[in-house]
Image (tube, rainbow over all chains, first blue to last red; front, side, top):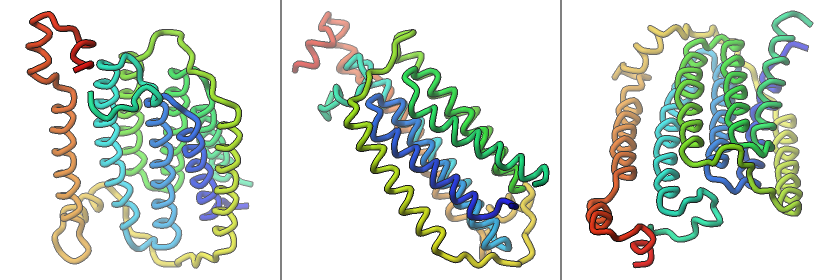
Length: 103
Length: 186
């Protein structure tokens, strides 16, 4: 069977829920960030698949993917800056230890 | 079953298996490496779909940028050889249950829906076509979102610098011999 839209939607849905599972079970901020990256990637895959199979004459999905990648990179950089700052003041990057909002 | 199909299934298996290992392994460094392979698998799927530019961006930004950033932050924050804490089994079971239900519902919706595949002529997605479209201000151009994203990147850059910078007050206090712990109590 030639892979088509449904196969790619299956992959991206599976990847999304793998990311959600990681986000729910992990308690370390860096691994939670990794789960978020998986979720964002599944969204990108969806955009590309819809663009390829349903609207091949347009480029909207492609541009959305480019912009999402840019925003994900910015988000990862800010999140890692926050995590390293948190490690400096708390000596731990566990979410259970990060319950105060200031300092 | 021709070569293209086999390659697609190999890429799908690489992506999903390494994604699953990435969220389930207890060694954080291995999690980062599995994430790397998962992202490479997705880049391979983009290549398979004939979107070479997106695949290249994926490899440059994710594999070359974000994963390296994550690995560096692991080096900065984690003791070597330390495993992540074991999770409560109840939390794992409930998360897995929620995830399976969500996945089942989503796939049910997807398979019940009929997508009308278009027979339009595919547009060229070479780098020059994408660049021309991205910077065009005419009908159907993407100059405005491009500018918005560039503003966002600038804001994120300044935000990163401000967050990572130590506050001057804390530095002067450290020079006077006040420890960080005492400052935290204030």
